[in-house]
Length: 137
View (tube, rainbow, N blue to C red):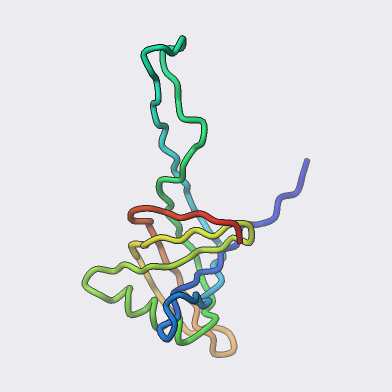
C-alpha cells in the first residue's frame, strides 16, 4: 500500500501595499476539503452515444474547513477584517504545493485564539464563490 502525503494548504492574500503580490497568511492544517467538478453535456445530434461528456473536467467549487497557525500579522489582519465584514468574503489563493487555487472565498466561519509562542491560531471555513483559477505552484 502506498503512503500519501497529508494535504496541507497555505492561505495567501494580496499584499495591501502591492495587490499583484500575494503574501502568506497561514498554514492550514487538519483540513477537510471538497472539490466539485460538474459534468458538461456536449452531446451532438451526430454522436453515437446517448450522452457525451466534456472530457476536460473543470473545477467548479471548493469548500475547506481547517485549523491554522498565522504566518504574518499583516496578512492575518486582512483575513480577520474580511471575516468580520458585513459580507464576509476575501480574494485569496490556496497553495497545496502542487497547484494554486485563486478565487473569491466566502468565509462561513472564523475563530481565533492565542497559540504557542504568541502565534495566533484558530479555524476557518471557506467556500469558493464564482470562478476558481487553478495553476501550477
